[in-house]
Length: 93
Image 1 (tube, rainbow, N blue to C red):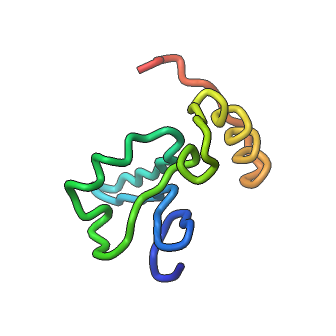
Image 2: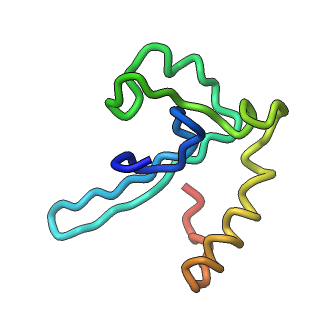
């Protein structure tokens, strides 16, 4: 919900989206929680947002959702939405 960025399920963030600009370079990315151990978020205030939580696909769907199950459909949708072609990195790091 505005003004919060990301993808939300109620008051819990499912996907964080970020942009950083510095030294004439723009970096951007996202973190989609698939099967994240959510207990780690008990020790911090996620994204600095008091009273908000974090969730995952596995938690919301009540079954294990591995990154490997989500990656290909996510990348396909990304290419469709942004009308682009993704090129694999030559450096696997």
